[in-house]
Length: 333
Image 1 (tube, rainbow, N blue to C red):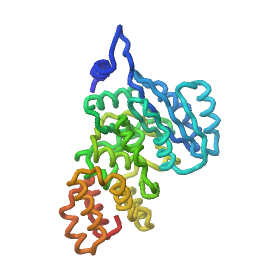
Image 2 (image 1 turned 180 degrees about the vertical axis):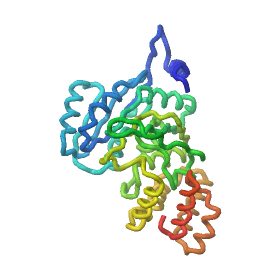
Image 3 (image 1 turned 120 degrees about the horizontal axis):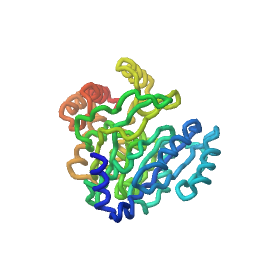
């Protein structure tokens, strides 16, 4: 969508007078930090410089031992109405983000998730809001986008993910996350749905963004924007997210993680947690398909082989789809 089209879409919903958008869309940004002092000021500045939206940054520091909290306190003094800070003990990234979700205020129009070392493009939020407005029907909605991967000096590397060929649906979200958390923007209905049923055991949740993708795709709609909205910084401390490795290196790492047991059973555990919390509200067909997926996973190898060839669940790439089928047959999903 062009910049002028974005502007007209938003002004039609929020009002317009003499060149000024009235009642601009409000966005609460949920940011979890941990030892991220190096890039903090640059990142916060990119959040504060978002165009045509009103923002508040809700920050939970996850027990940083560097100067992160010192810098955050200085920024909070400088922007007291836009920055709320909770310096707390280390709980890990998943629990930290779910804590932010619980603390979020339901007075905002939209909610965005943010990592601590990226730089947001000035139109990131208004671009997301404009696409969500087109879908607005009082149901859970989520926006996510491609990222412009960059070096620690913000030198362009590549766009990732470059292509999402298949629908973003419950049948994809159960076994694959293609929505990069730091690009995600959700509406109030999506926030309330997630907030109302926080998982009882966060150990069964692979990552907060994957969980949100699964929730929204099951009860609403997910919109993917192929146009990058952030500079996604890659450096030695950036252990999550996309990678610039070649395909050989990627598969070597996947096989190593599987051999060490790090990827075993995580998908089935998350699926079991999800159906316990949301099963009663799922459509009859989705509930049936999910139950069949979980039941077949517990059966013998011949039953798993029979099931996997008619499974409605899919990953985006053909190679990943084959890996999914193989791991399912082995009973290690």
